Length: 187
Image: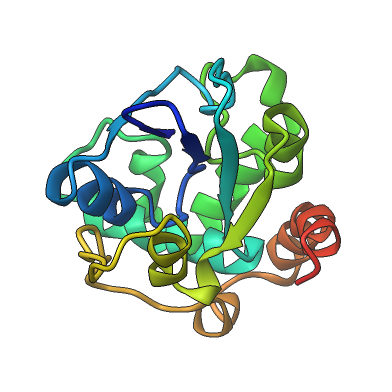
């Protein structure tokens, strides 16, 4: 979560929604905000300011998550599901599906949750879609500055490329997982 220094607003930024780019722009460059993080999702904002939330199409988010972990392969072997990357996308998807099904036993569900659940906890005044551009968020907040893209995955493929690599069974489950967010956020 990114919180404006005078508590005028907070932006809930679940995983894979441009979090690092927003943080870099609002915290490091503009110095108008600070970061607040909890163990799971950043939904526990206690301030009285406006609440905003970033979302992303869930299928694009899944693809981005996979390729993000592929790019971490050599840098950090301890990251969530990291050990499954070298075994191929379907082995990774199977383990991810197993964790979604057994979410109650997971210490950190940030890569498993649907955003509509986070929305219901956070109760934002406005939702921004990553697909509409981070510049729209910065402009809405009243700043005139180019967003610094600070965490762009080098081996990046969209959902249309990624889905062709998945087995039918894994693809069906991912579609069912994504359906609530697609409907809730009108994708």
